[in-house]
Image (cartoon, rainbow, N blue to C red; front, side, top):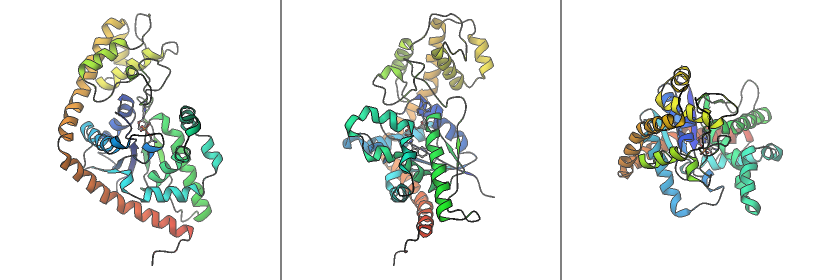
Length: 336
Ligand code: TYM
């Protein structure tokens, strides 16, 4: 039996942060050892809110370089750009025609993002999860490793696959494979540094709310110094009254590679004045090598371009074959 497959992606909108790393990329680095991995830059999704055309291409390459800098190995994983494979857009259209509008009206991320866009909400923002379903189902993955905020989109993907199978396939011969979400417990929801009840997010207007993977040691130190804490001495996990404390301890635990019990014991009697330098040191030690490798990789465009060309060729073959399968099931004439 062949390896099981995973697929996942990130939007190239601005710098990637600790949430993207701990909720997604870091898990992919481990999974690539065991799974046939397909990882891409979701640049079609990046234009569902206003974007800067002068930055899109560069941001896309920078996300690819970040994947590699974090330890994604192109000999183990297929890395590609979403817009380079037209099957994504084409399958999304076919799915648009079988997805009920009310399924999309329920999407939490749409509601959150739509509020910020006012009158300018595009059809693209509304149909965003349908494109995401196409991204996923084209590659017939077994699992989709993401952070907690994407769970609803993966459930919708499963619903779209099941509906298409029901309408155009048969139980014995489903057209599409129905994948599972893969959400690790720790790191699945990294919270803002300025408000422990809000998710760390690229779109938060305050830079102090997040740690970007490419932040300098000085900037990391400044952000940790200024992050929100509480006046209680002794640091504990899982206290609902202390969301910031739980979040910061979790970051320390994940980046230092220690167990929750070890961290809980180490920090039980600590004050913030002792913990913050420890967290800063751990962050700098984890992110420093990523930043250095990123800078090396972005100074050699040829290597990055080769990785993405090879990725595109491999990904396109699989995507086109699934697209043909769906078009056959829907009754399209093959090209003459
Ligand atoms: P995006 O670009 O918002 O986020 C990329 C990945 O990072 C995770 N993530 C977080 N995890 C933990 N804590 C946080 N604060 C945090 N913020 C972000 C996300 O869960 C995600 O795994 N729609 C997707 C991109 C996409 C996609 C796909 C993903 C397009 N097609 C197909 C998987 C499969 C998105 O906008 O992710």
